[in-house]
Length: 179
Image 1 (tube, rainbow, N blue to C red):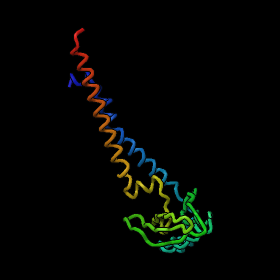
Image 2: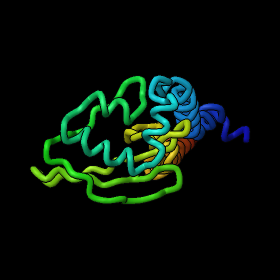
Image 3: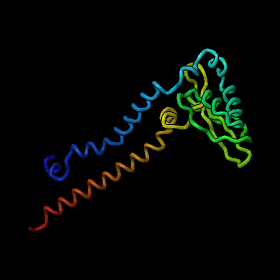
Image 4: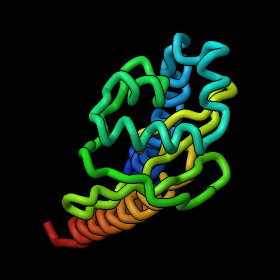
């Protein structure tokens, strides 16, 4: 261990190794804090809970909001303090239920002008269904963060191993050179 310390500071090595996990932990804490203030209580009254008690109600209302570029209805369907804009068009239609991944339901919409497909995610929040934008919170809660985090972390650790190996070889070869 003493020889290793001469070549590489173990504290820097530990910090570099744990850095992806520290970033992930910060992301989780940030999303948890944002969850406290994410939704607007005005959209969770008894009337809204009754109106949007089924995902199909939200899916059909979303079709109308997308067709008519109705920003007020989009905000109501999202229930957020600051609504996220979606691509809209007068020929956008609801196609079908797409997927149920446990926490989220996905519905497919199609813009008949340019044939772009849009998948919108629905989540049960405080007794009513809302349209969830595909943001960091969605990726964290749906489990899709793994498909981004794992490859990045593996590349980070691979690059770290190469750098450590280069440093050790360089410093060892410097010691072996005659003065």
